[in-house]
Length: 235
Image 1 (tube, rainbow, N blue to C red):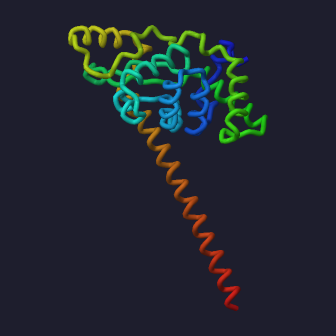
Image 2: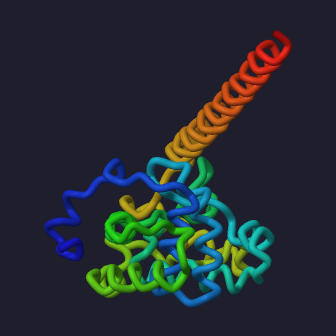
Image 3: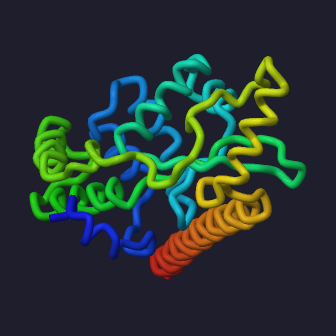
């Protein structure tokens, strides 16, 4: 079963392939509260363009994009982390300044999403099919998993969902930043994150380029077909 630790330890991110639309659907039906599901589903489109399925964006920007308050966004990410849907890492800049947290969809959640995707295919359903049928299949799949009851973070990191705004007590902020750096496994350096973001942008650009080429090829075929039809009718 996918909930077994021995199975999850063998999972790599390359085992999963989801579109943003698919990932958003599975997030919505993962047992999150309504607001958290809505916020995370909108972030899923960005995560699906990355090989690591990560989200790296300040809470205030996510709040502006989703229409929720910043405090609601913070609670949404905290809920997802506590339920094992997301993992979180503290991002430290070159000058030891705090950056936006790095969130990743956990292997256990992605395993659920993959199983849910397979279950829909076996049921001859699509995500765009009748909502009641899709919900029933996803609920049945979700019941097989215990990722919501597993520890959300495998690393001894500081409190994961601190706000991205400036902390009033500057001395306290410096102390927390130092603890984050010493944590090692729970921190991510900015250079490493920059390479991930560049990879995600390149992947998104390649996808847009391939779609553009496909549309151009389709348009060319239509024009050629119309020209042949016109020549035939003229003769």
